[in-house]
Length: 256
Ligand code: BGC
Image 1 (tube, rainbow, N blue to C red):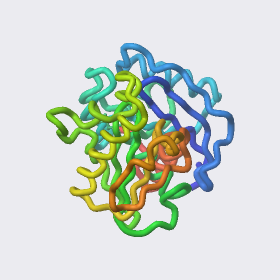
Image 2: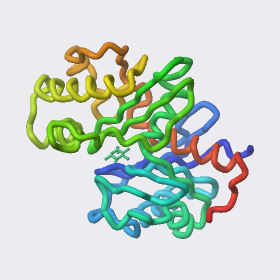
Image 3: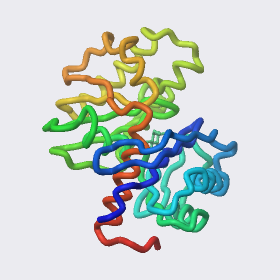
Image 4: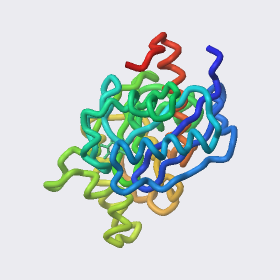
């Protein structure tokens, strides 16, 4: 596989970030570039930003992209925090058409999980590992002996009569002006509910809130060991690049 340098992109609720990644060691090869997420975040509007990122880096090779929802065989199935018109879009085909390059898209949290397992807090860790990304939504990723279960959507389990992420995502803390200990109380309840369902050996906390671990980690009472993610803002785009490399390596060279 010659394309170890892959453009990694991460579509988030507020920004779309990209950088070329060396997928052998996870290094970012040029400083990350960010465009604001368009409003509305429709497929066409987001595709235009993807194309702008490709132009910004004068990119010619493979592109990997993290999308904040379920993707099954290239088809978007959910759109919790982006425009609903994403549902049923063939994301690989759309992005490949607008950029003229082979693009492979994966759930954003799955991407972050792949990167943390290979280069970050999950490296050399055994057993059942649950990674959560805490941002506009809550992304959940489960690894057992290093194998990923894709599209696990535990941010949407019902908690207190609502979608769990509407109760304790990082954006809820900001929008409702919750103090760190108020928010940590909510998040801890959610984490305990998750623990009771999947019993991980290790929990890795990623996403925006992972940089502020000192403000809330002390309030968490789950039995599993809890650590902060190490790649911080970069995990999503590094993991998207890794996923694209893997996809094209396994011979699925044509985007259908
Ligand atoms: C989506 C997930 C996504 C997470 C983080 C949730 O609302 O349903 O697919 O991984 O947000 O962006």
